[in-house]
Length: 54
Image 1: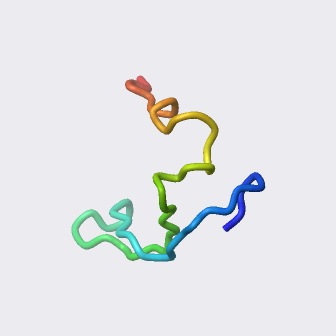
Image 2: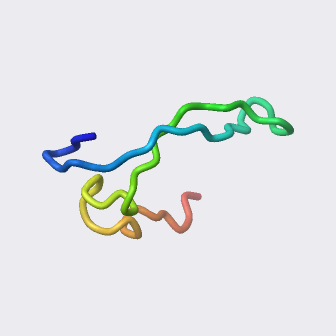
């Protein structure tokens, strides 16, 4: 996958979404980005953590 002219190694997979069915969940397709998403976002991933929204 190429994002902002950076080639990223990704793997397609499945995760559970428990929004609609909190007991069993629903399988949803997703992309897993290798190397902790290096090159996907600007800066460090910790720059995007919001300690408290409310």
